[in-house]
Image 1: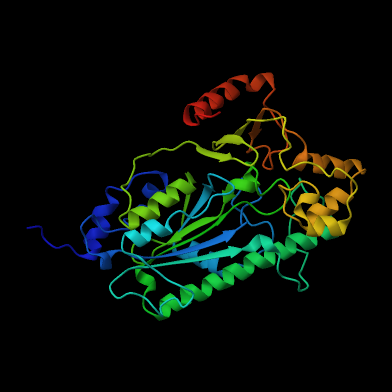
Image 2 (image 1 turned 45 degrees about the vertical axis):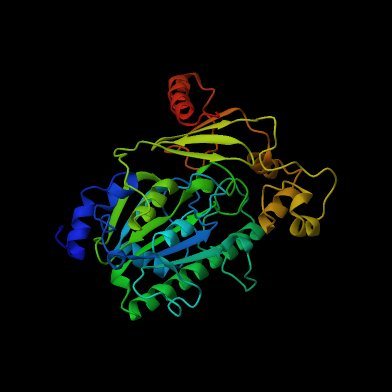
Length: 386
């Protein structure tokens, strides 16, 4: 007959077996071993902002956001500076598996109908790309990335986006406070991240960093030391493995020393490999328009604002999209619009250290021939359809 173990022993024991880039960097167990009682497993709080991403390779806020909840989790948990989503359209795959493994999925009432003896799963997913806020917003204290025009309309659009993410941060803080008041926070794994890429031209829907590089912080007051930063490359698959392993729905995998992550898109078929220095992209159908077809006739700002199919349907309607299309005929604006919408070459290579916004394609440079060959081989061996 096996001897009963304490929750702390379960944490310590599992920490010795966790594998994978994300799991190994957490450094402590987040789940009880197989056969342990469900009450030993932590609650899970997933805080996911749709459309929240960094604008380049640096995990640094350049938009002047006021995000006290995100800062709190950074102080109390582990920040992952090089986290990437696998696909621009990725969805959270965990809920059904977690339910099958004994988790009570909370509704908006949170604790009102919680099943006794079961750990809790709660998901807050914010639709930040909808640009619902109409109040006056502050357009100062933000940096417009160089692939967008620095105009009052674009600054206002970015500021509205910033306000949506700040609202998500506020709502996330309310949930964490509620857990704390209920005495549940110390036994809750809190994950705060983004998905989908920020909803701007050359952002969401692309495999550039603005479309795939997301914030990620993990806090577990019952077992993780605070204020830690990991520079390891991790993907949304690593995050999924962590969450499912917590629930006892997946076995840990071993992938220590991960030197790259893979990403891919289907609407505009493309595959990419991202290393600490390079982003290499293979566009499978370079004859296609990456952001949808251009307008077939003159379109008005009102049409662009209301009908996503009026031009470049791969980019959500926004003041920025409208400003860039209406501004055609101006060479600087044409260059930026082409960056977001023009047909792309079959192969792209960017040195993210010297070209943080991926504007200078090095794929055809003779000096980069060996790098292209190496990354292409790695990508092809992992993606069978490239």
